[in-house]
Image (cartoon, rainbow, N blue to C red):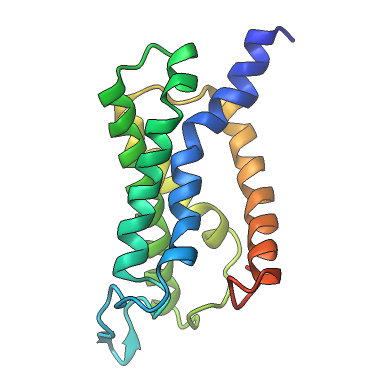
Length: 176
């Protein structure tokens, strides 16, 4: 495999998705003590989202992803001729998509009776990832098929490792 092919499959995809990863992980650090996004409202007696989805966590998660996109611009631009403002738009859409996917996952979990903080495999690991890619895809520059397959595997592995690590550090109550 050539150096260019290795980059296309392993490096570029990570650079591309990093704003979504950062946005998805940031609310755990920034959201504590903030107002819940659902303002504690209920549908048919069930919370819409739960206490773990907060206004501050969502806003700072999106901002964190955009900052990462701006910081990584030189790396991204070295291999893909992307104008700075296009990259910021991609980072913003990836970040907003990651959080929208996570929020959608919480909404679905509440509707089917899964309590806040409980895990639903696949939805928890990939909901943020899928919505982030769908939202950013119209702007182009997506990794190729092998790069996306690599990201699917990496996302599953990183989800487990980062959540277990955050739990052991006392940042999260549960290891998922």
